[in-house]
Amino acid sequence: MLNPIYTANMTDQQRAWFYAEYQRASKDELVGVLLALFLGGLGIHKFYMGQTGAGILYLIFSWTGIPSLIGFIECFLMPGRVRDYNAAQAQIITAGIMNSGQPMPPASASGASGRVCPGCGGTVQPGAGFCAKCGSALMAAG
Image 1 (tube, helix red, strand yellow):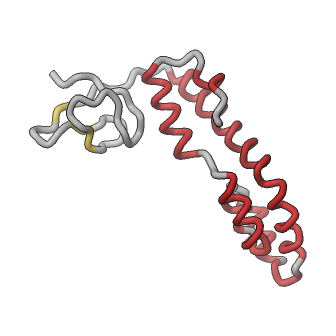
Image 2 (tube, helix red, strand yellow; image 1 turned 120 degrees about the vertical axis):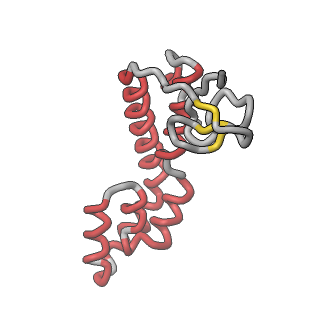
């Protein structure tokens, strides 16, 4: 569960932007645990958490069996590590949104098939206030 403190001082537009970015950047605890348990000897859980250097080390020493033992132990530590990672990502995203100070560009009409999101270029359903793909707030086409 995400702590609401990250979005407390945000507008609805910023909050939608935050949740879209957070969904893209966050990791799943169960996936981390399963990767560490079953593929920990190859360091796949390290690659999943963005620790490429450690993942490569695990791969290099995988023949020794030591990374498998460490991966088994890390599967019990993984939920806490994923929560810490997600909290750090939330802080980074919040800081980026609150410090951007840039207004979102207005949406433009794209004919009878609907509108196009100015943030990601995805198709937006008619009457939508936010882009379902990236969370950008949309202005009414005029």
